[in-house]
Length: 239
Image (cartoon, rainbow, N blue to C red; front, side, top):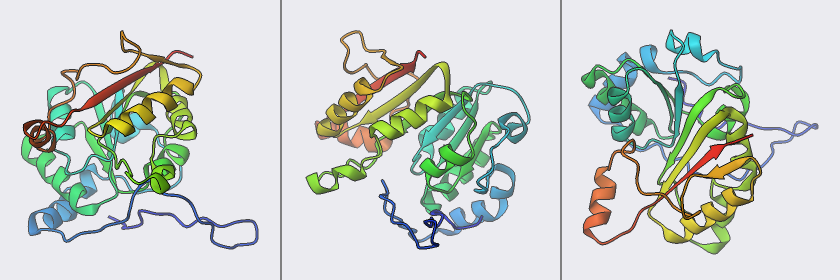
C-alpha cells in the first residue's frame, strides 16, 4: 500500500496550494495483525490511488450495485454490511492505515469477497476515480463534526461536496449520513436541503429512523448507554 493519503496540489506557477481538509492525517501505530493484513490482503482487496477513472465492473470482477462508504473507521460495520449483502459491491475509503488494516483483517476473517478499500482523501477519489452515475449509495457515518465554530468550514458536508456526491450517484441512488452531534445533524440537513436534485426521504422532511441496513457500532452502543442521540439523514438523487 502506497501511503499517500494526500496528493500534492499546485497552481499554474507550480506553487503548492493549501486545501481545506475535512480530516487530520493521523497514522497511528499499526498492530501486528493490522500490518499482516496490509501485507497480505491489500494486494487482493486494496486499490491504490491513481487519479484515473475506475471501471467498477473490472475492480469487482462483476456488475452489481456499488455502495461507497467514506471514513469507515475500523471497518466493522462495513464488513458486516458487505457480508450481509453478497450481491452488492462495497468500496470503502479511509485515511488512517490502522483502520484499513483492521478492515482488511476482518473482511478476510469473515470470508468477504465483495469489498474493496482505499487509503486516500475521499474527495480526490470521488473527483478523479469514481465515474459519474456509478453508485447506488454513498454512506458517511459519524464524520468528524469539527465542534468549534472556527473549524466548521472543515466539515465534509458542504454544498460543493453534496453536489459532487450527487454527480456520482445514479438517479434513484441515496446519500445516507449519520451523526451523534446534533448541531452537525442540523448543519447536514440545511446543506442537503439547499442542493437541487435531492429528495429528503424523511416523512417529516428532517431525519429518518436508523435503517436496518446500518449496523449499530460499538461506538454508537456506548453513546446510547450514555444517553447520546444519533441522527440519520437519507437523501435520494432525483435528477
